[in-house]
Length: 123
Image (cartoon, rainbow, N blue to C red; front, side, top):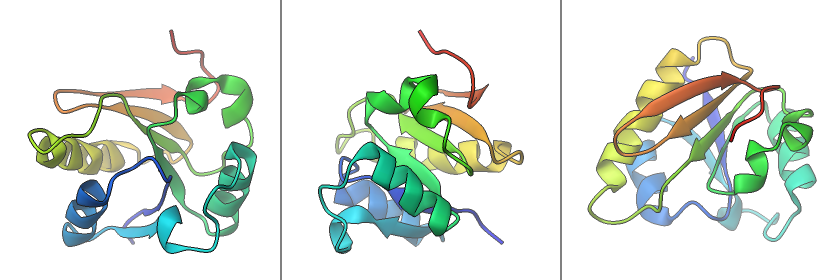
């Protein structure tokens, strides 16, 4: 069963569309009644729906915020533009494949993927 994602409001539609076309099940907050919810509410929604969080919000780099995350976080660590969106989508898929242990933090860019335990500090 492919992993399910909860995409934060800061993830643009072109990346959502590409990832869905690649077969991912994505709940995108702008398509729900949950627009404008807090980070804690995003975490609660992800936990309730058994989804990993896909975000550009650097608050998710703080171990104190990630403490409540059950399924993992994919943080897109660079701006998403027309010229890099496909590579970011491909690296997001690669990160998900590498995240066999679900409780990880993945930093994704157009050129790299880094995986960390959710409890670690990121500089």
